[in-house]
Image 1 (spheres, rainbow, N blue to C red):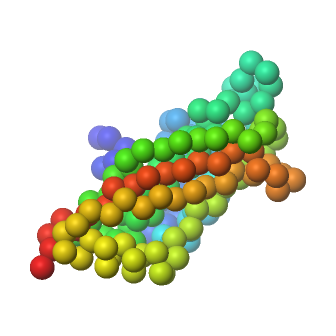
Image 2: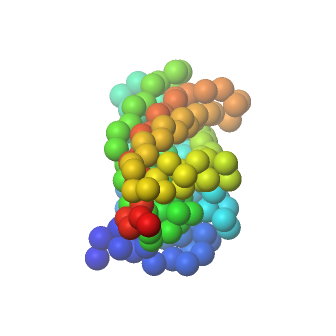
Length: 159
């Protein structure tokens, strides 16, 4: 069974967090989902630096930095909007600001206003392509990388 089918099953945020933390690519990169809000509108992830997630110059591997934030806006919106909406990742871009060392963290959030904006934008069956920016910081609070995620959202059946 694919991860997508498994991720559709958990009915609570804590169950989802536990399942994602068992996902092979996250285990292999030492990525951890630290928290998912009960209303699915916030997710915090972190990654501690280990020998197996460091690159040739001794800092966090860029692919692991991207992987730690990659699926979360899509997963949150799937839960918040429900089964009447199609939610897909459309594109992404990562900008490395400074070398990442030690523990890095990122928090992704969705406001009530953003959710309402999406619902209004897609009410008649139109697509919406929101852009979300995620900042990955180190323990000192300094920015290590910025990720821009574009999603594709459309209501499956409109009135």
